[in-house]
Length: 325
Image 1 (cartoon, rainbow, N blue to C red):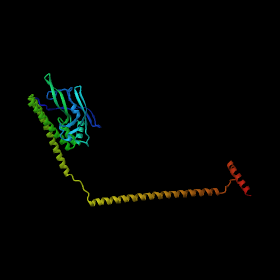
Image 2 (cartoon, one colour; image 1 turned 90 degrees about the vertical axis):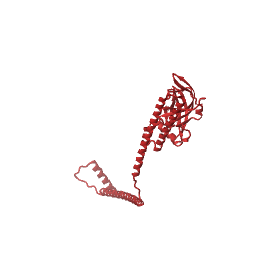
Image 3 (cartoon, one colour; image 1 turned 90 degrees about the horizontal axis):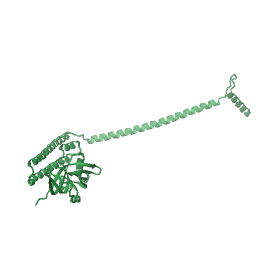
Image 4 (spheres, rainbow, N blue to C red; image 1 turned 60 degrees about the vertical axis):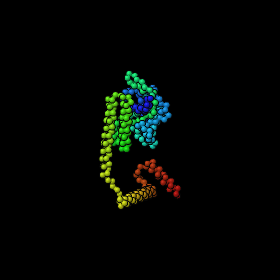
């Protein structure tokens, strides 16, 4: 009796669309091209009934911890021009901080790989290529392999991820590589496939792990140097005497500012009053002078030419004199 076991197939993420507001990413999780094992996953015979009853999006095929459940698959688009797509709804930072980290890393393309976990029920061979058919989809996982260790290091340096998260991502890369190595070794035992090809793949995994270790070592050295530098920096601490002196000076300065403002206001009011009094005195003098001029008798020059205005004035004076008699 053939043992039924789960198969995990790696796939470089082909992102179709991103909605950052809704926290949704639509990406291809499988296609009909030969993979590294020389197999083709038939896209027309996916069995997704059980998966859609509990459409988990996982981190690293590990549902044992709540934080590894990144969200849910809300829709599937199977066998679309030889590709199968899933729209993943990621949890927010409040619900699951890890899901938020993975979502942001996918958007930035620091993480670039997805792995479909499924059970293969039937298979066929066409042109010496195994075709896996009637595959029962179990889960879809975002995985760190083949994430770029340098991209993670740069993310840590620029502050988009912290040291704890970078360490977690690197550790996940190691775990995923170990899982792939175990699966490849099982294929050697179960199928007796070409040893040279398997050794080549194992060598690639070993190189990837070596780069991860190297990057983590560099990060550790940088963080240690930064921590040592921070320890040498001293920040001035205000004593009670200094604080009291500062507060006293601030109070004195505030009082001086208040008094200066009051003096300025008083001077402005006094100037307004002075200007008003001067204007009134000038107006009174002008009125007195006008009255004085009006009270003076009109003197006539006998030799002056009699103008209509002067004649009118004479007539007015005569009429006034006649009225007083």
